[in-house]
Image (cartoon, rainbow, N blue to C red):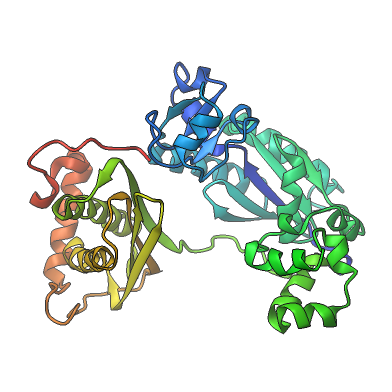
Length: 410
């Protein structure tokens, strides 16, 4: 049972409708005045919703919903974009504030942060976890102007689940000894990681709530789900989670993607878009001091079918000239497999490492250039020029199209 972990004191700080808050703070006279606000997509209905204000959510608008559908549900909503740099900056401000309030902080995403306050009872003079959560919420709001909800419990799973009743802008802490009573009041679909593939066989047996599933003998769950999934589910049903909160967790990936104002079915135009994304991602990679081994190209077709392909390099790379030819091969392969207009294109680099030196790489046999000391030096020179004169000061010729292409912020 979760009560065995009662010595732990874990909080999850969740920034409420984060992208909406950032959009309002960055444009107080525009987005800041709108109650019905959608971030993501375009006013014409292109793209998908990144975040929506609570007023829009009352109409059924949800994140990841096509913006066109969101506007059908809430026709008076205003659709805006938000600068990714502003999102990163605001997220960093919240992270900095939390670092002064907790000895261990782990970013789970741009708008979620786990805090481990275990052992701080004396430091905070016997302050309860709930009192600490209120103090942290108020301090973050005062310092960053970002409203947060805080969930707490004896482990990460319980803290995550507790953020739901804490929203919006409140605090909810599952007390030691009260874990199972809290869990038994939830639906199985509330549990992180319990998706449609797991819900269906349980629903077929008439099980919809945690309490109903927990009443089933474990042996029957094993028969229905298989031993691995059954054991994993039992841990969730009982609130067991021994995963630590790890401060300073290394960044796992760097990516960028764009939703187009119109579907693109021209290969050369997609290549130009891919090149621009690749240049930006590689510049961020170098700026952070990383090399990457895995490249992923993501393509979303006009009918919202999302596909991707990945390639892992023998050694970490950082150069646009090495990454782009491989990215183009991946994109062309996706296009060969299914020909359709593209509404979104993305590039991601993962398997990051700071320990990477010059390497002689023959990628896709001998069709891609090698990453050498010379290419690394050239990258540094170009990065320096962009740092002084702006990102667009030096661009590959392939990025500049023969005619203007409207950009999207989403």
